[in-house]
Structure formats: structure tokens, C-alpha cells
Amino acid sequence: MNVFVLNCGSSSLKFQLISSDLEIIERDEDKQLAAGLIERVGSQSLINFRIDGKSSFKSAVPLRDHRAALNYVIQWLSSPETDIPGIKGIEDIHAVGHRVVHGGEAFVRAVKIDNEVIAGIEDCIELAPLHNPANLKGIHAAREVFGPTIPQVAIFDTAFHATMPETSYLYAIPYQIYRRYKIRKYGFHGTSHRYIAFRYGKLTGTPRENTNIITLHLGNGCSACAIKADKSIDTSMGFTPLEGLMMGTRCGDIDPTVIEYLSHKEGSSIDEVFSILNKRSGLLGISGLTNDLRDLEIEANEHQDRRAILAMDMFCGKVKKYIGAYLAGMNGADAICFSAGIGENAPDIRAKICSNMDFFGILLDEELNQQAVGGREMCISSPESRIKVYVIPTNEELVLARDTIRVVLNAPRYA
Ligand code: AMP
Image (cartoon, rainbow, N blue to C red):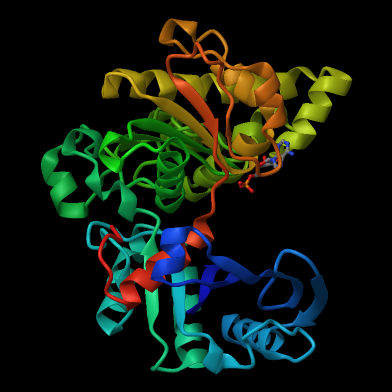
């Protein structure tokens, strides 16, 4: 089956074409046929496509909307010059999987998209006003471009965290307010945390019911997840992806009183304050330089920039704090797994996070740690480490493709 996986932002469209089926999933031999990103949809769009991880195609063309962008992708995929084995036209794409950020309390697993599901995703717009409308644009565009016969599936970032107990997901605000407005922790990056747990199981031969780990998705957005018996029991992002760890541009945990105070002091609106907390805080806000960890490392190493060092120290300190909290909440864990841009590529950050944790029995092997970069999946703790430490590159698109196949074929276990 050829599955087209789509991840739409307000002005971007990211896709992968993956060839797989239920048996291939079992054998872990899914094949990525093509992948790409279109940025600046709505104006002069930037195109960057790749075939099978090898040759690439770059261009800039005006694309009016997501539908035009999707048509452009399909034309490229089907063109004889692109020459993707088995792809001659749109009829060779058998299903479409959409990443949807917020499924609220309604969607606890991936579902086949119909009008009712679309209405449900629309209902969640008020919970994710920046993300769900963009995801819906992708769904509407795909329905028009692919027509009614090609099944489409929605996979939700929040779904994996639906197993959190009330004690984790409730905020200590009046219960009626939770009931009335569904104000609670939802958690995000669920597809990524689930994949990391799955890979951990494969790598170590651990059965799902014994998978007790802490997963750390550290990219531009960052979140930690406590996984017990393969289920999310707590996670750091909350009602929105602003809560929790310090991120590239987001502040993470903060006393909510700051919002009113800052708005009063600066004479700015609540929206303006949230813009600061979402877009001008985190690594960028503290360093005053950049949200990109690679550049911060350069500033710290080559110029001893005090605030670049401070930003990274704070970043690591906050991850440590969540590890400690989850180890307490879970009564210990078997492993800590690092993933995403920073988690997969920044050994010094991993070393700092894991330093002075021998109290918990966490001991890194520094040589292995330095080797684990550029997409390598490996254990980086020393043999004496009571809690093992792994680097496990995430692959959200693969999970989207697999979930799509399982939903379309009515196969079990896509929770
Ligand atoms: P993501 O959102 O998963 O793409 O991750 C983006 C973050 O990963 C940015 O802060 C990048 O600077 C960081 N990152 C990516 N590659 C590297 C690398 N080789 N070394 C350090 N940080 C990296």
C-alpha cells in the first residue's frame, strides 16, 4: 500500500510517501519513497522534495493555497522524470494520513475521516487555534485532490496521552471549570513518544506491558513523557504546548500571575504577552541570540557567551527536574530515551542533563554518548547504570503511515 502522509501548518505542507502493509510493518521494512516540504504556501512558495533520501528537487513557485500546493506535489510525484517505482499517477496512492494536533477528549485514537470527524476536529479549534485550522486545510485540500474513494485518516498528537489518569491531567482548579470548558492537560508530541516507546521495546526486547521509561522529545518544541506499561501516565506539555520544559522560543512552566503583571506593566494585551511567551522566550529569550541550539553551542564554546551558556544550563536543569519528578511518580524507570533534533544530536546537552544523577543510578558512557549523533539509535549509558539511557531517533511520519494502514484495514492496536 502506498500511503501519503501529510502534516500541514498554516503556511506549510510537509509530506512523505511511504510504501508499507501489515506484514511489512511486522517486519519493520516500511519504505519511504519520497518526502518533501513546501514553505510559504500562499505566496512565492519554497519547494524542497527528496526521493528515497537521495536526489532532491528544489524550486520556488507561487502556490495560492494548500490545494494548489498538494496538486503540485502530486504532479511531481507522478511525473515520469521523478520516476518513483510504482507511482504513475494519483491512482497509485492508496490512503492518506493526516497529522492533527488536537483531538480534545473526543479522539483517543486514529480515526477514518468523515464529515462527523471533521466536525469533531473543528470543535477542537478553540483548544488549538493555531494548529487545527491548518490541519483542516490539509484535510479539505486532500479530499478535493484525492476524491472520495481514497480513504483518509486523522492521527492526533494528543491521543497517546489519553491514558493519563485524572490525577495527572487535572489542574487544581474548580472541578466544574474543567467540566464546563474541558480545561485540563492534554499533552502533545504523542505520536513521537509512542514511537520512541515502541522502538525501545524492539531494541531491548522488552514486552509492551514492561515498558517503563521516560521519553524526552527535545527539538524546537520539547516535552517529556512518563510511560508506564507502554501507556502515557504523565507528560510535560499541558492544555497547550506552552507548558512544561523550556523550548526554542517557548517559556514552559511559569506562574500564570506573570501574564497579568506583565500585561499591566507594559500596557500590552494578553495576546501580546502570549506572543512573548510563545515566540520570544525559551532559549531565544534567555540567550537574546537564537533558538537554535547549534548556534548557542558555538557562541558558548567559541565566545564563552554568558547568556548562551545560561540558556543551555537552564534548559538542561528543567529537563532534569522533570526526570526527577517522573522517577518519583513512576517509582523508578528502566530507561530514559532522548529524541528529536536536540535529543538526537547534542551529546553535550545529554551529558549535562544526565550529570550528577548517580543518586538515581544514571551513568553515561561518554564515548558512546559522543557517538550517538546523526540518527543513530543506541544505548549511551555505562553497563553499571541502573537506569539505562538511550538515543532513539523519532519518526512521526512512519507512525502516521502505519496508523493510516491499520485504520484503513481495520487492524487492531492502533491506540
Ligand atoms: P527539531 O524541532 O526536532 O527539528 O529540532 C530542532 C532543534 O534541534 C534546534 O534547536 C536545532 O538547533 C537542534 N539540532 C539539530 N541538529 C543539531 C546538531 N547537530 N547539534 C545540536 N543541535 C541540533
